[in-house]
Image 1 (spheres, rainbow, N blue to C red):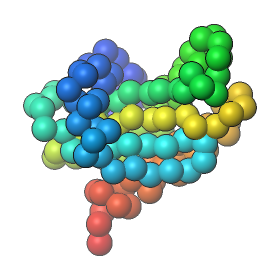
Image 2 (image 1 turned 180 degrees about the horizontal axis):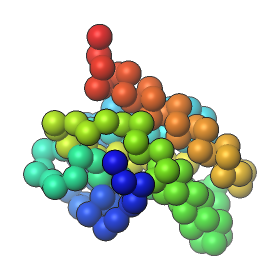
Image 3 (image 1 turned 30 degrees about the vertical axis):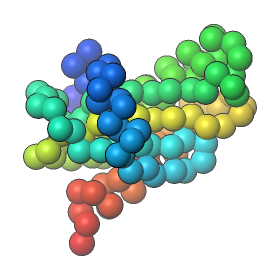
Image 4 (image 1 turned 60 degrees about the vertical axis):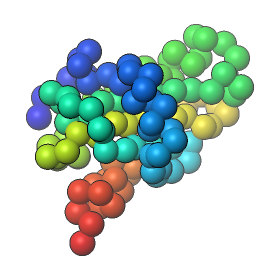
Length: 125
């Protein structure tokens, strides 16, 4: 699997996002929460991903954008943890912390969350 995060992998559909938050399951490892759901829409990629940071916790757009970049980059580098699935999924990573994180901290949390996702959904034995 290539370590890229191109336009097709980004979650942009408002219908999919609405369904994700109304019917999705979640995995939390403070300060990151993953909300995921099997996608109902046909897609050429296995997983579509979105990221979000609360305006309540980070007033400045510069800070929110930096955290979103860190989340996307750590997902891009570690998406190999999730094997190619037969059914497409939609992911949304939410940053719920109140302080500006370091990249290494975010990357470690993303790894744990993706491993938990694989244990719960891909290998439910």
